[in-house]
Amino acid sequence: MRRNTVVGIVAAGVLAGGGALFLFQDDDAKDTSGDAKPKHSAGAPRTEQKDAPADAPQAESAVPSPDPAQTADLLRRLRAIHPALAADEAKAVSRARNVCDDAQWTEGDDTAVGARAAQRFSGGDVPTLGPEQGVRIVTAVRESFCS
Image 1 (cartoon, rainbow, N blue to C red):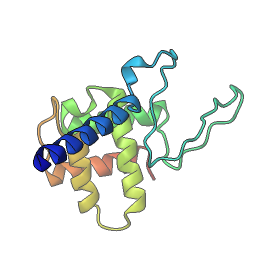
Image 2 (spheres, rainbow, N blue to C red):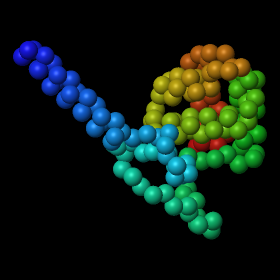
Image 3 (tube, rainbow, N blue to C red):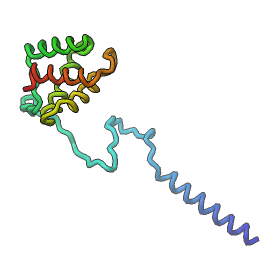
Image 4 (cartoon, rainbow, N blue to C red):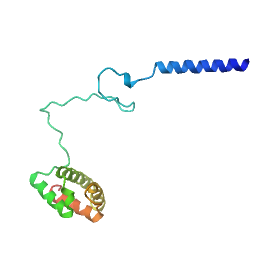
């Protein structure tokens, strides 16, 4: 009899605890606020982002952007390394700006910068590039717009 009483008390406690948890759980499917804002993580501070006025000046990037003549020169140099490097001009310029940023932060030997440049430009229609081609990319970026 004593065992049945203990089992009954434990079972009642489990049911009561489970019922209480069920009542207080979050159910995202029942969110009817119509607000499509994503939930923020508990670790990130919540900040309200306000749109900048249309006439507000844009923050200037420390990484230079090539002008049209420099872009044409850059793309010509990249095509000389491999034609597929400049197939998507916007992507090529974006990657070149990343290489420029990397080169500005890395003084001296371009070998490491070249290895990272080869990784940035490899993939898709471009075969895996070697370190020598990476250094040639760095040279093309430096000589076209990133001085």
